[in-house]
Length: 302
Image (cartoon, rainbow, N blue to C red; front, side):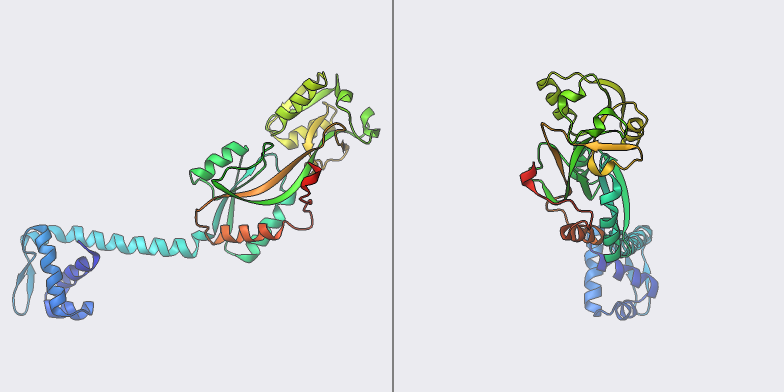
């Protein structure tokens, strides 16, 4: 059964005449008659009692009419929703952003994307890098922004590098180590430490401490960077934070002397999946750079 057969059937039901129905459908009468006969063959019986001036529904025709009417109405509803999706909803973009990335460097990118496509609506979710990759694969999000310390070489994804930033030791500005240009790992021995539980470099830092025989006393832990920064500012301890996150009165930051830790943050999409209008605008703007706050992608500093 094809949709044009349904349309012809309903036209004959309405017009009660094959000639008038063919004119209404703008098709020749033989074509309409042939389509109805194919429909009758499929249903196994006559649908109309044909007369010269009027064609009435048979009992079989009366049985199938409400079902074919519903099929026709649902097809129109599907087309209408598809049109609405293509003209409006395609500008909706669900973005997963790693929870340890501050909005500071990203709002300009989103704003430029919205300027390129004024109908775009962003829905922002957070998670770890592995969480976001899984959400990309299952289609829950259209794009993700994250960093992985072991690199991003998965061939299933396309990546647009956005910026690089250092990981620094944050401390109260009146801390005894605040006068140092850089912090030696051994300087941290015995110091209270505020642990960011979602930090992607926790394993790297733990290995560095073990290598140098340093034992830090974890005074507190938080999944949220704003809380970690507030705890550091209130002398709960020192902590390792991304450079652009450390924006808090009374808190200063210094690099580690033995190892510069950098992370590269990228916009990630699933390779081969078509982009809607909003996502296409986001990817285009990402490829232009994130704006004045962009840190140079100098890989030699790793």
